Image 1 (spheres, rainbow, N blue to C red):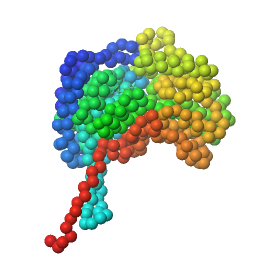
Image 2: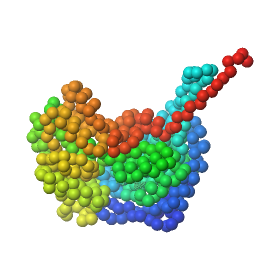
Image 3: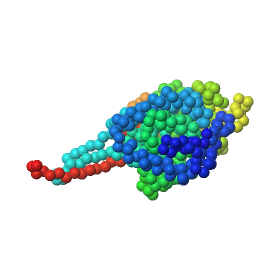
Image 4: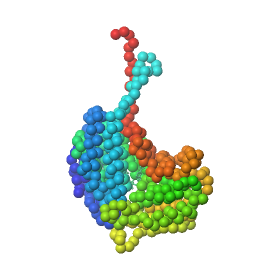
Length: 486
Ligand code: NAD
């Protein structure tokens, strides 16, 4: 399958004929191939998006809404099942988690379809003289949307929904590791009658992404991925004053205060630590438990972890808790973090190694759900994004101590607090330096609320009203009028 580049409604191979393999992480086998787009392909895609922009940006919000709503419906009815299966095959998550991701993506498009009718400006009588001011919201232009492999469909929807609603046109760069589901998702927009050139796709690896970022006709870069790549994009964008939304890595603390509902805290921290094999930007990376609950928490958490099912094949066991990791580097990084913790004095309560055995394919990328105790701040697991199935559990005494540990990371994406005392909740939520905080809930995502990070976790927010605003420029028109009788 090498016709993976989309330019002005035509699926085509790359100009240079180079292809990249897409690997099934459960087996380590080649699932398919994609074209490696080069500068010639990228330029053609950007030109198509630029050509489509004047018409798409000026039709009514009502017309854009109709097409987006139709795309969401077509995706659900025609492509969702197939897309979810592809997603499981290319990034390993159990099928039900893939279905959940695709369903949410459809929902995001439907949500922003409505929003495209609600983009308005404002106006006011001028402060000086006989003037009146009009403040308009106009789409920023051609957007480069670059997504990672862990939620490739959903995170693309978070960009396409608001961006298309605003009137922007797109060149999408899917992840080279999980591009196939993304391509199906895009097809739903074409089927829905999106005008030619509004959506274009260039497949390829980081080189393709870098060339797209640097293209002079790209006005905004909407990127989700690692901090290293995000920082590089910020530098490039800064030089050309391009708009950016950067959604990067995280290291989420999960604080369990002494009055928390223990069973809920155990179940929900475990789910958020191990779901998608810990490869989520808002995964729980550090569980901080008040000393009065610590022993009970650890006992229950270890018991629950021992019951988790790591499926060798997420299509066969759609309800499993975990699948494989994405690739060999991810497995090696997790193992390095675990070994580093052990060398610095941590104890491994559960897991701590690759998963071997007859059940798992020799070339699959499996790591056991791992629970660590006896931790300190010198350990990589306590400071960096492990991005794997590792749950370090730390004891604390005072709230101030918990907040200090929670904040001692360069990241600031998600944090969680399980507590009931309103004063504790108030102090903690004000003290935690994170873009989203879940209080007695293990997910910070709500379609209507802002999602994004502080510190090294990124710049800008997706979803909600602010997500839409990030695809709009604000223009001020100041009009002087005559007061004479006409
Ligand atoms: P990555 O940064 O390696 O790749 C992300 C995308 O960027 C891919 O499509 C890749 O091809 C492309 N890319 C690579 N180099 C590039 C360059 N120089 N210029 C332009 N594009 C380039 O990330 P990944 O490994 O695919 O994803 C995992 C990371 O994503 C984790 O750090 C995770 O926390 C983060 N993430 C963040 C969020 C969030 O909302 N904050 C959500 C999901 C994942």
